[in-house]
Length: 187
Image (tube, rainbow, N blue to C red; front, side, top):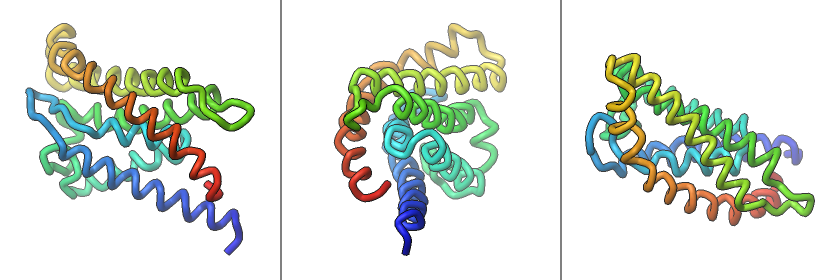
């Protein structure tokens, strides 16, 4: 097998793995209201940071499509189109945007000439991805529920800020440790 083909197969496997890890992390949840707290953003950040914009977004698109087919991969072991068109569906779709933006910014701004990552830039890239997810998800929540902006922010954003900051810290550590290993294996 050629090295280019091996790299393509490896990237496909990693996309599938990140989709599966997102499905598992979505089940580690605390149901606090209309939007549960879960760990799904952690693999979203890692997917973007490790796989780059395109493959990171593909991994989360796979997660979304599997859930749309009815496989219970969304939080609370739910699945199907009803979840995606419901009040929290924008956050699930936002995973794609978050992985893409994180991957784009990490790939273009965080990599030094020696191949090492600028940690503050990785953190900011993940924060930008999170902002994209929050924006899309909250706009979707507003459109579906007809709720006011302040209510949406108090149930969809504010309770998640501290936990998502912790996820960014853990994801940054993982990306900075794993990215060099993937580079050595031809990723």
